[in-house]
Every structure is written in structure tokens, then in C-alpha cells.
Length: 344
Image (tube, rainbow, N blue to C red):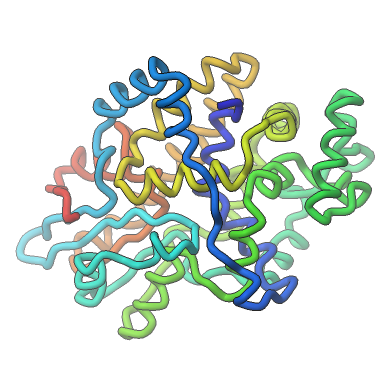
């Protein structure tokens, strides 16, 4: 696999930002939004590079809380239990057909806590970006293409044009946004533009149907700021890898989806570590992105969720990659003295 580690994070768990940006801008009929049809790249690795595959699988066994996406948080001092559910920003019906245990726990919750309290509309995003242009715009007097060699700039222009993006207008945008755009499969954009909800959207819709209060653990500006906080050079290095990759976005999509469906989210971490070793020039960018995209957000989410957990009866639904690992939400809760056990 030739993709960079950072790209997996973007493709799997920040895809929602691009989906929200693009869905609704161009109406799409439901019939024009078929299921994405990709191939699992880990299956290919198991066949073509068995030693690399075996190393990833062995390392995955050591990731704390890496093999479940649904957890029970025991209530404190007589308060009802709470739940923690890992979502994915995909609309594929294999993921949005929620397990009955998840539906039952959600129906009995007092509060639903999600990353964003509402799925942003294009107008919401445009307003945030208009008021905070440094989140997405290149600095004054600088062009996106000045960050690349002539060869890579030409490849980038061609890739953008193939996605229906005007390369000249894109010159004003930061690499992080275009990286997510090019890494995301067009089939998923079309599905969400047709009105199909991703998993987190389905959870929110069920909560609204049940009259359950919905609160956000983050703001849209905070989410957008994560990617924009990387240096332009780090962003450009990752975008160059995306442009050069021979792997199809729909295949990366299917790979992440299969990990999610089989509750093997922890496998993402050794997979990313192996890819970072293969791309030493991206190592620092990958480390920075992991710290900002996952670790710091986990710390913020925990602080904002704890008052809800202490009252009991909260159903927390956030991107799955926030759950596993030593600094994931499950281990952070356990470190605070909470009893957290698998519920799936």
C-alpha cells in the first residue's frame, strides 16, 4: 500500500467535513448514489505481503480497547449506566444498520453527546470559513502550487480537474482541504448529497425521533482548526503522497469500512505506524496530525463529557478512532476510575 498514515486518519474520520461541505451543493437523485464498491487493501496485503500483514495483526492485539466499538460506562453512585459508541462518517447500509443493542441503549438514554450537535449544512460551513479565512485559504500572495515541484503541481492540477474542481481557483486553498477532497471517494459524496445519512447522522436522527436531547462535544470551528493547524509544508507533503498514490479512494474507503464492521478499529494504529516507517519524510507530519487530530481532541472530549457521565444516562457517539489506544477515550475513562466494559 502506497498511501501515507495520515491519509487514513483523514479518509476515515475527517471525511465528514468534506461530505458536509459538498453534500447538498449539487443535488443528486437517490438512483445516482449506489453503494461504494471497493476492495479491501488489507486483504491484498495478506496475499501479497504476508509478513507485513502478520506484523500489523500481531501489533493490533496489543492496542487497548482496539476490538470493540460499543462500551458500557457503569453509573456512579446509583446513577444509570452510560454508553460509548464509535461511529464512522460513512452512509453505507452495512454500517448504518445499527445493532439492536445500540438502538436499545440509545432509546433509553437521557442525552446524546456527539462531536457536533447538528450535521452542518453547507451554509454553516461557508459562514465559518468566511469569518475565519485562515482555516482554509492560503496566505496572501502565496499559491498552493508554489509548495510543490513542477511535476507534482501538474499532477495535482490534473487530479483536481478530474474531480470537477477548477485548478486555478484551488490555488487559493490550503493543501489539507484538497487532501481530504482527493482522498474521499466520489460515491460517498454522492450518497450523502442524495440525503443518505452517515452512521453519526443516523444516531442523531434516532435521538431526535425519541425526543432525546443532543449536545455537542466540539464546535465546527474547532474541527476545522485541527487540520489547518499543521504547517503548510506538512500539509503539502501529505497532499503530494495522495496525488502520487496508486490506491483508489474507494479501496481505502472499503478497507476502513471492513475494519469498522469487524470491530477492529485498533488495527488502524499499527497499520499507520508501518506506513509512517515507509515514509520517513512524513514522520513528523504524521506525529503532529495524530497528536492534534486524536490525542488533544480526546482530552477535550473527556472533559466535556464527564459532567454528563456523572449524571448518568448519556449515550456518547463519536468517531471510532477516538476509542482505542492508551490515550483513547476508553482508557482515559478507566484512568479516571470509571468501569468501562464491552457492550457489543
